[in-house]
Image (cartoon, rainbow, N blue to C red; front, side):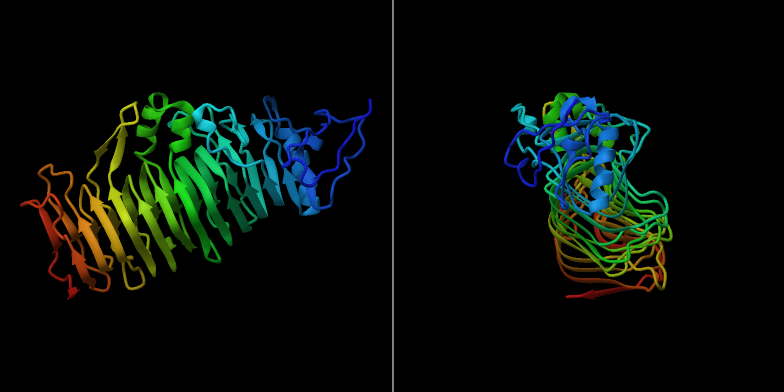
Length: 430
């Protein structure tokens, strides 16, 4: 048998059909490849939605890593069944582009990985890697099933450059998951859509500031692919627990720029002993019950929250696309704090919450140029713009130019800034 390989750099993107090697190319010569570009088809990858591509993708990834180049992926559905993890290092994954109409029945899939294994990690990464123009989809995801993270480290080696662009993560269980103590740094993500049933990002250390810009944290592609009647119950399960950024230890710096959201339990959750600081979160976060939670003992030094239309509630989907609003948890839930454990700075934020806006067990807070409506649940419970339940670590809640402090549902159960302890100090600046 003779196998032909067609050398390509950009011909895949031009739509030229490519010859492919058998899944086990025992009688084929080593593919002739451009020193920069690797054609995944040449290594046996088939985007037919039927063939298991785990082994072929590993062969292509190994070749790409050896060259430090770019792997060109074909259009179609690339099935990964969990035959093996794909070790990914110093290589860019370039697909045929996302398909914004994939959920409208056009049959166009762009380049889409179909993931089915509930036990084997699909991609184990180290060093640096990049993803551009690719979709990732779990067709059997129910919102309650546990799947391995889409991208995870090997438990030892860190990530020192992660670039994601023009990518859709449709319905991961966990998206990007770092082992506790392993550093993920220099991350840049843009112009993408991402949703996860559990944690989209789970990090514990980042040596350098990272950036997410123009990213939509939304379930839209999932609902579009399956239809709202099919996924309403899944979404109602997912948004009871899922988190956009979960910081489990160490210190993390991560800037969110012009981001949007829908259907999450937590925006950012910082665990005991962890810190999320020197960062800014900006955008329009709708349908998140708690934007920021440090109640377990996390800290947020020099964290700035800003943006318009931050609306705190849990969406409840009715199966036909309609949404009702539930929940009365605080939009910002802060821990006890301390001398070196600070709360966030809230600047220029326009927010509505069904419960209280801030509940703090002691962390200090700065609020400037904000419009906050609280108590939207109107269920007879007491809700506050800021409610201090413990002694502030450094004794300050600074408020400047704040309007609508008692909320749209103003009544005897909505309040401004109050404290349950006599030692709290409020520095109110007009």
